[in-house]
Amino acid sequence: MLTLPRLAIAVVLALAPVPGWAQQEAGPVAEQAAPRAKVLSFETEAQLNTLAAEGTTVVFFYAAWCPNCRATIAELNARWGEVNPDLTVVIADYDAETALKSKFGVTYQDTFVLLDSEGNSVKSWNAGGVDGLNANSAG
Image (cartoon, rainbow, N blue to C red; front, side):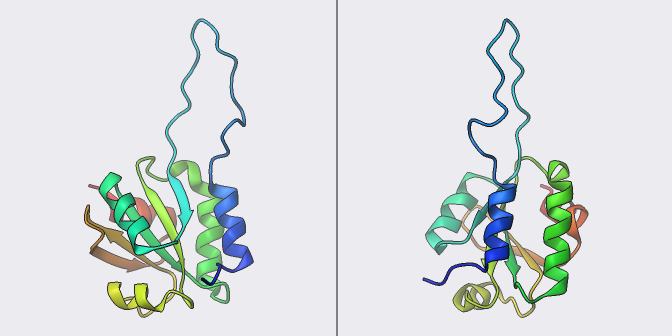
Protein backbone atom coordinates (compact mmCIF):
# COMPACT_ATOMS: atom_id res chain seq x y z
CA MET A 1 0.00 0.00 0.00
CA LEU A 2 1.36 3.41 -0.88
CA THR A 3 1.95 5.79 1.98
CA LEU A 4 0.97 9.43 2.08
CA PRO A 5 3.63 11.95 1.22
CA ARG A 6 5.82 12.96 4.12
CA LEU A 7 4.05 16.31 4.41
CA ALA A 8 0.66 14.67 4.79
CA ILE A 9 2.01 12.32 7.45
CA ALA A 10 3.49 15.27 9.29
CA VAL A 11 0.11 16.99 9.12
CA VAL A 12 -1.69 13.95 10.49
CA LEU A 13 0.81 13.67 13.33
CA ALA A 14 0.65 17.40 14.04
CA LEU A 15 -3.13 17.49 14.17
CA ALA A 16 -3.74 14.22 15.99
CA PRO A 17 -4.21 14.56 19.74
CA VAL A 18 -1.43 12.86 21.66
CA PRO A 19 -2.71 10.88 24.67
CA GLY A 20 -0.94 11.74 27.87
CA TRP A 21 0.15 15.24 26.88
CA ALA A 22 -1.10 18.16 28.92
CA GLN A 23 -2.90 15.95 31.41
CA GLN A 24 -3.95 17.74 34.53
CA GLU A 25 -3.66 16.33 38.00
CA ALA A 26 -6.94 15.08 39.34
CA GLY A 27 -8.08 17.54 41.95
CA PRO A 28 -11.41 18.26 43.55
CA VAL A 29 -12.67 19.82 40.32
CA ALA A 30 -10.72 18.45 37.37
CA GLU A 31 -11.63 20.14 34.10
CA GLN A 32 -12.47 17.92 31.15
CA ALA A 33 -10.60 18.73 27.97
CA ALA A 34 -12.89 20.09 25.28
CA PRO A 35 -13.68 17.54 22.60
CA ARG A 36 -11.57 17.97 19.48
CA ALA A 37 -12.04 17.02 15.89
CA LYS A 38 -9.95 14.07 14.75
CA VAL A 39 -7.73 13.72 11.71
CA LEU A 40 -6.59 10.37 10.35
CA SER A 41 -4.93 9.09 7.23
CA PHE A 42 -6.97 6.97 4.82
CA GLU A 43 -6.37 3.24 5.17
CA THR A 44 -9.35 1.36 3.70
CA GLU A 45 -12.95 1.86 2.67
CA ALA A 46 -13.92 -0.29 5.66
CA GLN A 47 -12.21 2.30 7.88
CA LEU A 48 -14.27 5.07 6.24
CA ASN A 49 -17.48 3.12 6.68
CA THR A 50 -16.76 2.55 10.37
CA LEU A 51 -15.89 6.21 10.95
CA ALA A 52 -18.97 7.39 9.03
CA ALA A 53 -21.21 5.11 11.13
CA GLU A 54 -19.72 6.65 14.29
CA GLY A 55 -20.19 10.30 13.30
CA THR A 56 -19.65 13.10 10.82
CA THR A 57 -16.78 12.17 8.52
CA VAL A 58 -15.15 14.14 5.71
CA VAL A 59 -12.49 12.85 3.32
CA PHE A 60 -9.92 15.41 2.16
CA PHE A 61 -8.12 14.54 -1.09
CA TYR A 62 -4.62 15.95 -0.69
CA ALA A 63 -1.73 16.15 -3.16
CA ALA A 64 1.72 17.17 -1.94
CA TRP A 65 2.42 19.01 -5.21
CA CYS A 66 -0.78 21.09 -4.98
CA PRO A 67 -0.29 24.65 -3.65
CA ASN A 68 -4.00 24.90 -2.74
CA CYS A 69 -3.76 21.68 -0.73
CA ARG A 70 -0.71 22.94 1.12
CA ALA A 71 -2.51 26.21 1.90
CA THR A 72 -5.54 24.28 3.14
CA ILE A 73 -3.36 22.12 5.41
CA ALA A 74 -1.58 25.22 6.75
CA GLU A 75 -4.94 26.81 7.60
CA LEU A 76 -6.23 23.62 9.21
CA ASN A 77 -3.06 23.48 11.33
CA ALA A 78 -3.40 27.12 12.35
CA ARG A 79 -7.14 27.00 13.09
CA TRP A 80 -7.71 23.37 14.13
CA GLY A 81 -9.32 24.47 17.40
CA GLU A 82 -12.13 26.08 15.39
CA VAL A 83 -13.08 22.90 13.52
CA ASN A 84 -16.36 21.30 14.58
CA PRO A 85 -15.28 19.01 17.46
CA ASP A 86 -17.62 16.22 16.32
CA LEU A 87 -15.89 15.97 12.94
CA THR A 88 -13.46 13.34 11.71
CA VAL A 89 -11.28 14.37 8.76
CA VAL A 90 -9.64 11.56 6.80
CA ILE A 91 -6.76 12.60 4.53
CA ALA A 92 -6.52 10.58 1.32
CA ASP A 93 -3.62 10.81 -1.12
CA TYR A 94 -5.09 12.27 -4.30
CA ASP A 95 -2.53 10.57 -6.53
CA ALA A 96 -2.57 7.12 -4.90
CA GLU A 97 -6.24 6.58 -4.07
CA THR A 98 -7.63 6.32 -7.60
CA ALA A 99 -10.41 3.85 -6.70
CA LEU A 100 -11.60 6.12 -3.87
CA LYS A 101 -11.54 9.14 -6.19
CA SER A 102 -13.61 7.22 -8.70
CA LYS A 103 -16.10 6.08 -6.07
CA PHE A 104 -16.74 9.66 -4.95
CA GLY A 105 -16.42 11.28 -8.38
CA VAL A 106 -13.41 13.37 -7.33
CA THR A 107 -11.59 14.91 -10.29
CA TYR A 108 -9.65 17.67 -8.56
CA GLN A 109 -7.21 17.74 -5.66
CA ASP A 110 -8.08 19.90 -2.62
CA THR A 111 -11.53 18.28 -2.60
CA PHE A 112 -13.54 17.52 0.52
CA VAL A 113 -16.23 14.80 0.51
CA LEU A 114 -18.85 14.60 3.26
CA LEU A 115 -20.01 11.04 3.98
CA ASP A 116 -23.38 9.79 5.19
CA SER A 117 -23.62 7.19 7.97
CA GLU A 118 -23.08 4.38 5.43
CA GLY A 119 -19.91 5.88 3.93
CA ASN A 120 -21.53 7.27 0.78
CA SER A 121 -20.86 10.76 -0.56
CA VAL A 122 -23.46 13.33 0.50
CA LYS A 123 -21.70 16.35 -1.02
CA SER A 124 -18.30 17.52 -2.11
CA TRP A 125 -16.56 20.88 -2.43
CA ASN A 126 -13.17 22.32 -3.20
CA ALA A 127 -11.11 24.44 -0.84
CA GLY A 128 -12.82 26.67 1.71
CA GLY A 129 -10.55 25.91 4.63
CA VAL A 130 -11.93 25.73 8.14
CA ASP A 131 -14.97 27.89 7.39
CA GLY A 132 -15.93 25.77 4.39
CA LEU A 133 -15.31 22.56 6.31
CA ASN A 134 -17.56 23.64 9.17
CA ALA A 135 -20.30 25.07 6.93
CA ASN A 136 -20.44 22.08 4.58
CA SER A 137 -20.35 19.44 7.31
CA ALA A 138 -22.89 21.06 9.63
CA GLY A 139 -25.86 18.81 10.36
